[in-house]
Length: 149
Image (cartoon, rainbow, N blue to C red):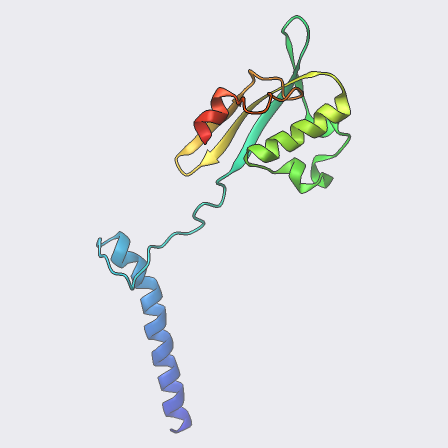
């Protein structure tokens, strides 16, 4: 093969591969085609699933709740806080942050209103009905926890 033929062959292979990459998603999503050789185009699928958004508060004896900034309570800055504090993942991540807050604040009535990201959207995780510093006895779970399992 001469240099010119090799260059043309490489260019042709590149064009065929690039055209395939561009047309395969259209085959499934625009034209509705189905084939085991052409996969669905799923960009960033399930990236945020399992992330938890929570608002913590401390309830006093009269039932009034005071919002609590988890970073300030733990003496951390948001930008330098450890990952487990910035990004809570799953109920375990929420309970870890709650445990750290309970350890730092002492005997308080800590509540959280939290939601977790699922493929179907945001689902309530905790509605603030339980004191997170006093875990439920073994074998007894909250109504929300029973619905998630």
